Length: 329
Image (tube, rainbow, N blue to C red; front, top):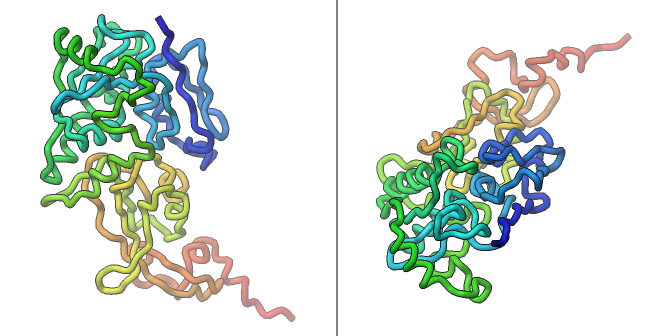
């Protein structure tokens, strides 16, 4: 049997490559073997520990990790797709864990007409690659279903696959995977959560849900704009509302949950929330600081009435403005 391949890290895609202080540890938390170690600017994979299960690939918010070789999904028949694990009696060692399907993978399957994931796995309870809590396929299927139903779309379900069902899928699968992508009848895997973003961009019903939402606490935010600058997907934007007033707006359809926005916030004013609606806009006050002359765009809630003059948050905090206009003898 062919040994499972090790995951590959795309240079520059890991959040640690964008921010050395990145707190993202999704892949590390998902790895049941402890084979991943953060290093400056990226990630180290210990070959002697890695089993090639692929759970880190499914957990990575930025699609920075990938697995060469066969995919967890074998093929699609009607509205059913088979997720086959390497530890299933009819599986093979070159295949990753059946739980190694990300939210984006499942969104792509649902968009291609799949309504049921037939799960063919080994005994997960005794498997050395047992997914940590919250990283199993059932939890992700439930998330995709909730996101779809919040938009009035068909949901996705999961059920154990029978031996005869597995045999039928394997018989129909292409003999030469290189000739026909294993996702050909369902959907080609997409990077950077493209399929998930398209699902979340669909019009919502009464209260829409999003997988991950950056939420700004207006009373703490100083309006420095660091979160807007570092977000790789323009989820946080500065825009004029319907009344023409400037505000911060969160458009979470494309949010991957990488957490970079929260990592750069010095005021701890931004947190990531899971499976919640988009937050309301954060109104901004625009003025020129009378202390240092800098143009300021600050959340109204952070600058209550009675604030000393038109001072920016830095001048209010440090008092340096009092030294700027001293008359020297």
